[in-house]
Image (cartoon, rainbow, N blue to C red; front, side, top):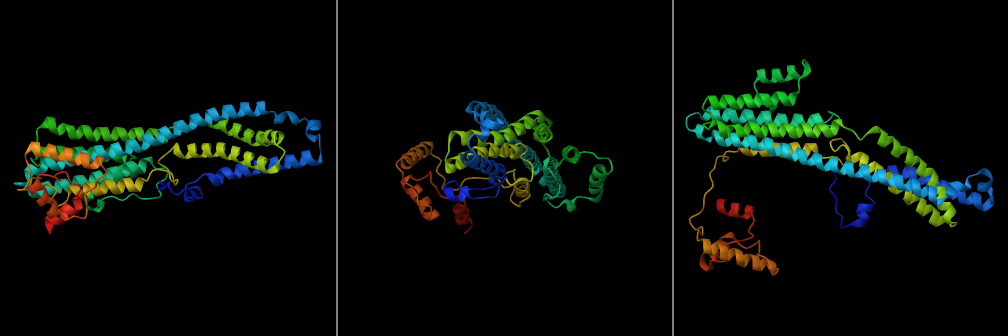
Length: 386
């Protein structure tokens, strides 16, 4: 997907990456040239169109009828394409959220087992993270147009040889669905960890993990629905016929209404350019999981998932947050500070982010103000470890 800035209009207008203007111009330019040719014919051979029976093609009524039907169909296709595109990105984010939540819950549930089964807990966490990273990557591979670009996963080679052999055979020999297999392996791993005491959690609470895994898979199937179901062929065929008719009719109509070459060229070009651009844009958005510049960044989605999973393996992932000794616990003081902060925001005041953290803390303790601060989390963390 292309990142762009709408504030610089000139740069946005002339950007060719991800643009359909070149493809639309391939149809608009010939139509424009044809319109200019018709003007030359009318200028040097008056009455030629009437003699060969082409004058009626310049009727604005016929052109308006074709334009109306074409506009209706293009509006319908564009609306459907945008809906599919938005649904596609929503489903991928939901799938990632569900699967990460399941792994996060398992890591949290296994915290109690670290006291007496530390090695088993770490082995369980690392195995689950690798399985889910591979599962998420395999899911993205399924919905891609091609499998030319490999999707990164977290240390797949770290899995045991039997698991790797099983993954290979089920895919290459039996043509089993790899995502379904990985989900099954993950659920089996979670169940065994519970039976072995790695996760000491009540079964009704643990069932939430299986539910989130299932919801994530349902989101994947809905995303595959977008890939497998194309825009209906009869609609696409009718739009193509009307577009070609539009290319032919527009020069006749514009050259009949105007006799000056410049207005005819401009109007003909942009009339064709607009309708063809809408059709090409809709065609690109209908499948948001392809390899076009405007498609969703699947590699970026996988990178974000890997980063989130790695966070669960961090040394301090089991850290329990607390409050400092100087924390203000008086509810009334906190409410008053919030009200003063809201007033400062409404009046346009800004807290200086460069102010030292120590000064902000001292000010909060002494005056009971500025408790609701705009200090960055990075600055606070730096101060805490310095």
